[in-house]
Length: 114
Image (cartoon, rainbow, N blue to C red; front, side, top):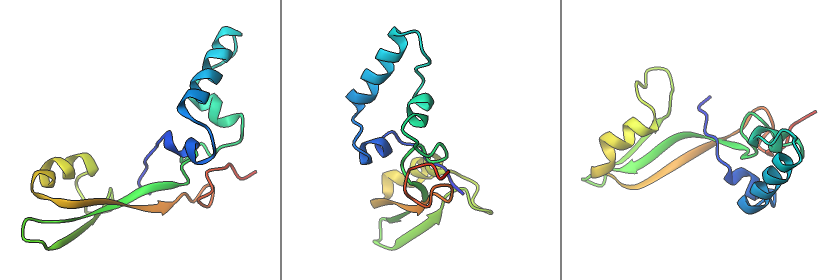
């Protein structure tokens, strides 16, 4: 499964970047572990998708002639990831969009399943 980690997953659950930053600062000042991974574990977020509930599965775009293109990311037979494909096709592409799959570890919820 392709992976994509994003801190925006925590925003989906009501945790702003400022709130996470404050949590980490408070923990560090108290001499406690203050890693982002530690933050994810405390409220029970999924560590696999980092609370996002999804992974980028592929991309779709239109080429210079307007033809629709689609490619799964990191699939068998696909020799490049999204960064390489964007570098190659990006200057000539329009309507670039990511496609997503639900995280299998949390069933797309972003929360750890006990």
